[in-house]
Image (cartoon, rainbow, N blue to C red):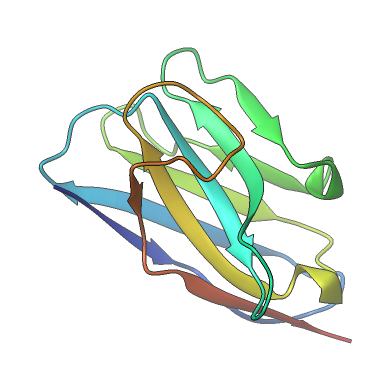
Length: 123
């Protein structure tokens, strides 16, 4: 079992920045990919960004391109960061980290999920 813990959420003014972190623990093994998703109450969880573990190729939702960056903070840990710049009120959501055992996708077919961290952007 892989356990994911997110951190770094909070309250930020429009135009500001936050960095989310996610680290895997438990029965850890290298994922095929890790990603970030977000969800607003009453709406479906949506893809934000993902990174392939081998090679580091990244993929972003159109609405975050140029503002958000997904990265691996270290080659020695199973962890990902999401640097979020120029935040807007529409970015307010619960952000979830996800771990994919095989393959790479923008869909919700990831195998393990964190509990989520709230990001609130105010004007």
